[in-house]
Image (cartoon, rainbow, N blue to C red; front, top):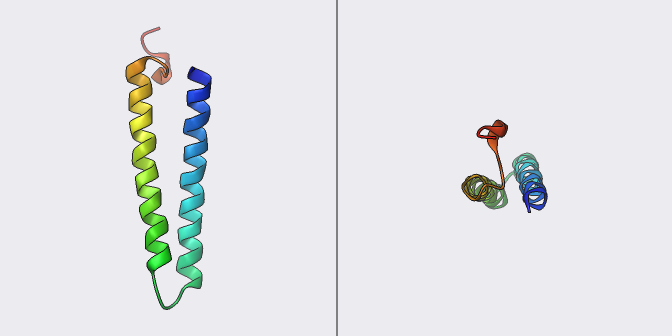
Length: 71
């Protein structure tokens, strides 16, 4: 379960980076409206909070061990 959990966290982090790059692209190309840029940044913040929640849940369940503390 731990390896699948780590893969999910890495994939979500890659999606967060993609969303940040998407917001940068929209900021550079959309001159009139900021709607798509704001949406991409909002999605990035929400996904980051989800990743933090998943990591906390994984530590609580014992699937993740930060720096192998306690082993």
